[in-house]
Length: 280
Image (cartoon, one colour):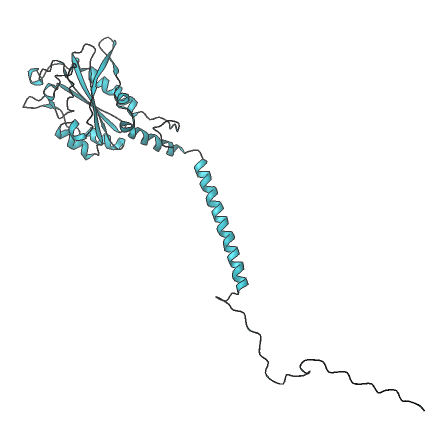
């Protein structure tokens, strides 16, 4: 008896939806969120790029600051620093450096002698160091202080009060210097005025030197300083008792003492950061 071969079975259907068009509507995958048209990954790239830019700018700024702090100063900067240091000397220098204990001057024949310092005033106010008329001129141009000291010549017969009027800069000092009124003999017998106030010290050759004894005055300028002097005799004789046509030879040391004080005070020096008076 013969057997027929088994008939092949149809393949089993695949799991899932049947082939062909879907039976109903298919929902689309949810869209990604965007901000200003950019997705989150794109914003991450933007943030990284901006961060790199900020780092680059910071590096450039730090490098520029380092170069600026470590570079050599320019000539203009050196000049400004030097001028500022000169303008501070009246306050930064000790009084004994501004008014040395002895100052040299020349007499007839080129012979040198020395004037001795008798004392230094503790009052540096502009209004108390000069006559009222002169004080108005100094204040109008920014006077900061008037420093005074009195010297006696080698024979102790002539006394000279030297005054340093300090200003913010040389231009203001020059303007004040040019506006100093001409000296006159006051009708009240108070000597030459307007002028620096005489500075007396008890127990010295200048004990009798008062404003009444002012017989001569001088004025000069150095940098931001105006240097004034008044001179008289150690015996305190009033100017009214001296003829007006008297030659000023006894008081020739006065302008020399003024220049000796003004020169070191006003000379410009190159900055030296190792010294206390410089600000580097």
